[in-house]
Length: 144
Image (cartoon, rainbow, N blue to C red):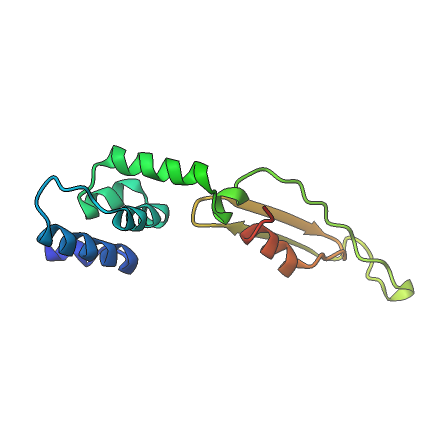
């Protein structure tokens, strides 16, 4: 791979690429790739994509894809669990007498998207504002 192409790689993928190149430099062609390198390639594919990772690491696309799929079915990570459809009801806070703000006075939209493309959009209207920090945490780190 030329130097100009490797400069365009994310730091994590570049590090894995260097590990693969060092390993290839000390082993004969057609030697099995160690599990620790495959695991690093699977992690890189999770953040950089299958095609880009397989090209950068000079791996067979379908072999990498198979390992990514095996890992996904074995133990799904939080990002994959976040993609599962879930209903979350936001209850309005209890009113405190006359201090409560009238409904309809404010409005906002909260949009969250993770690296894998899972999206959540919340449209808030009125004075009832849920704990947005807790809502965000439930999206980024869903319960198993």
